[in-house]
Length: 78
Image (cartoon, rainbow, N blue to C red; front, side, top):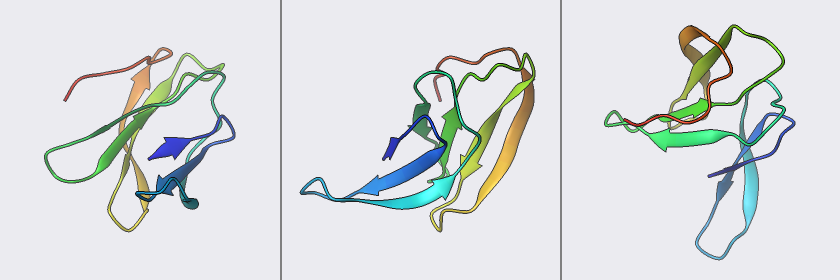
């Protein structure tokens, strides 16, 4: 997986080809991503808000808010 600051999460194959997979809010810095034990991708990215969230992206690329209320989240461990 890879992401751009515009909010697009890309799926990258074994030879480096990418395709858009999911869309979250734009960020002012790099996204932080980790796969959880449920197989979902969890994404944080600081914005100009002090009330950011952790997004959960399922294997189909559907996005929902996993947790909201963080002030500029920058990374996490699962």
